[in-house]
Image 1 (cartoon, helix red, strand yellow):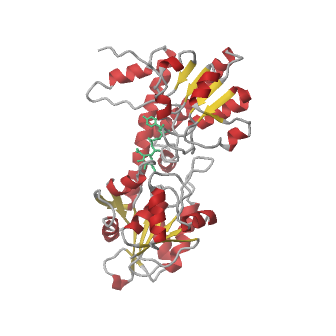
Image 2: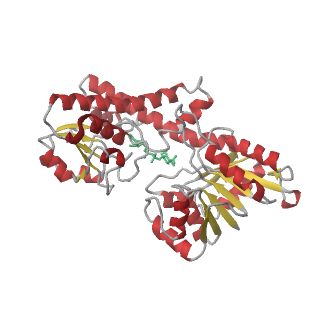
Image 3: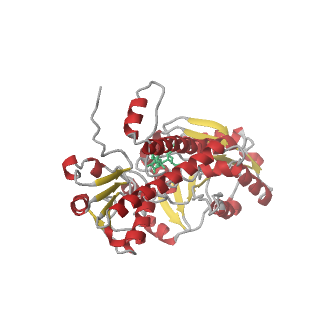
Length: 416
Ligand code: SAJ
């Protein structure tokens, strides 16, 4: 079988490389010329453990090739970004463009899979578009002879940092436009997935993906709301959570400086946009998580105003621990806000980046290592729970005024 993967980003590239490593011929397609060139040379343009070695291997064996335009294939996988626009509404322009680009290539027996996070009904829209433009093809009936193509929604659900192993071991949700579509897609995923491939409808599968991330967002919002309540009453939220979680049926997640990343901070809006009158908890959760970032900014400003000569160490910029990804990062939002307001008094530590991002470099702010920052600053904002920060002993930070948004510098005595 020949497979075309449209979109060589965080999901498309590892998926293309993995499938190629299983003996299938894969063409990776991307509209960005530098991505096509980088991958064609056997290198990668994103950072993910073990991906570089795998891509280099499948490119040099010829199993993975690249192109800026799709080519005829048996299976088309669409893995393009689906962001939200300025009004928190889904922007499906990349999916629509990908679908248009394959319409003329489709032949009976083809399987078209959407993997991008998408609002309910998107996959049905794709099937409708195929019907309109290619009335010679039927969608998802049995048998090659009657001119069928198969259309399915199969969301990715892998965790950045563990993408390659989760692509193989996670269970997959396979949503067919018809049961025959689901069966055809199940057969395809079973070639490289060890987890269960659970079949359902395309609409249910779209909502499954959105539900997973909205559920996590809501649970984090609970923790963030609790942290703000604790602050008002001067109660240690980490202690409250630790003790509450000893209850056998309670598991409060960890508060933070807000929720970042390109998934959890975005996907709930796809549900809210589809059912604004019903998705009340989800909307409020998004608002609470965003409000938490503002709360940290206000607390930091108050502390900085109280210490007019103090230098301030912003510890961490990425959206979560031990990654180099800055997308939707609340830590970044806080650091940039403070840099704009206080300029050179703001020092930044980010062990996972080699250079400061342009938003900070524009304010002539470079990166320090954690030791330098703690030596030269009087205030520290702990914004990301990177391993490097967890290891800083109390003796090296005792002199600091700290806002610890992640609860790793609490040094709570354990009382049992
Ligand atoms: N966070 C907290 N407190 C917590 C847990 C997370 O503040 O207790 C914050 C993190 O710091 C980060 C954000 O939430 O800013 C999201 O981080 P994450 O590790 O929860 O998730 P992501 O965005 O890296 O990946 C998620 C995963 N979804 C779920 O766990 C339900 C992943 O499985 C999905 O594949 C991915 O979104 C995606 O692509 O949709």
